[in-house]
Image 1 (cartoon, one colour):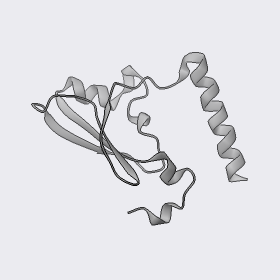
Image 2 (cartoon, one colour):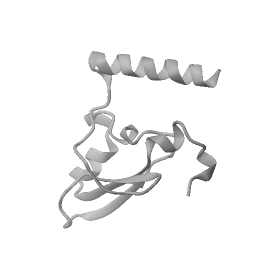
Image 3 (cartoon, helix red, strand yellow):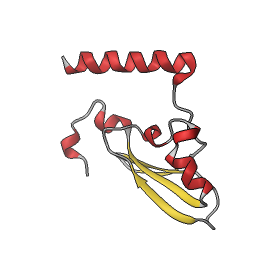
Image 4 (cartoon, helix red, strand yellow):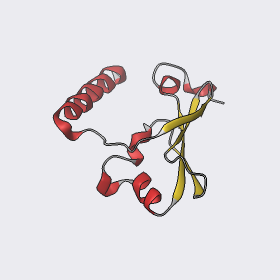
Length: 102
């Protein structure tokens, strides 16, 4: 039953995205990856103060960067923080047993 609810939620989100109501993320690059995680960098400069955001494993990283007016990522970049985001790989929690996360 939960799988069906999640599938319907994803379809609803994709439909809203196609209508222009999806997240508008800042540009980023993947700096390094592990078996179950990825590290995103939102800036190319190392002169800024570093800031690491560790996203909740059950949330997608764009939750921190949904729209320009409410974006934590954009606010930190404007304040000259060198933004990094540590996130779980999507397959870690969408298709695998999360109890083995290391």
